[in-house]
Amino acid sequence: MIIDGTWDTQKFTDAMKTNVAAFVPPFSDKPIKGVVEFAGQGLAMTNYSKNQAAASKFLEFMTTDEAAKILDGVGLIPNIIGSKTTNPVNQQMLDFAAKQSFVRYPMLDNVLQGDVVDAGNKIIPAILGGKTKAADGLKQMAQVWKALPAAKRGASYK
Image (cartoon, rainbow, N blue to C red; front, side, top):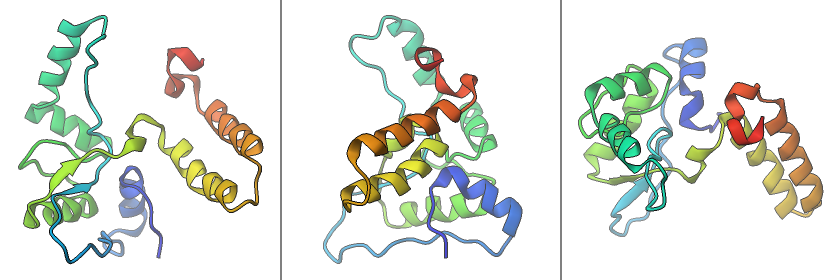
């Protein structure tokens, strides 16, 4: 079994076809009001944004069916109630959240590249377990970030 993020579901379904499925972890028996899920929906505008009008138009666009198709096309799950995805594993997760009437919240790591998140999933536990010094772990994370193509790092990290 492999447990991974939604950013990799397309890779798995391409390679394994129907031999891959969503694994929904067990939840509490007590009432749950929300679930953290799905890369691709961490979109917001700060009150100090320099281009609030443009940012507002972009956020409005991101609520359209056209934007949902774009997100689905890159392997992410659209954050539009009632939207569908062409990836069967991602659709299983959407269906699960809908059946449970969960409020969907974005993942914190939406702001990072998948490769960096994957590395962090290995490096951070080693730091917390005392097998790696924090400074060494940060150096490893920086190396992973620098290994990304410049176009994926954003203007402040080129």
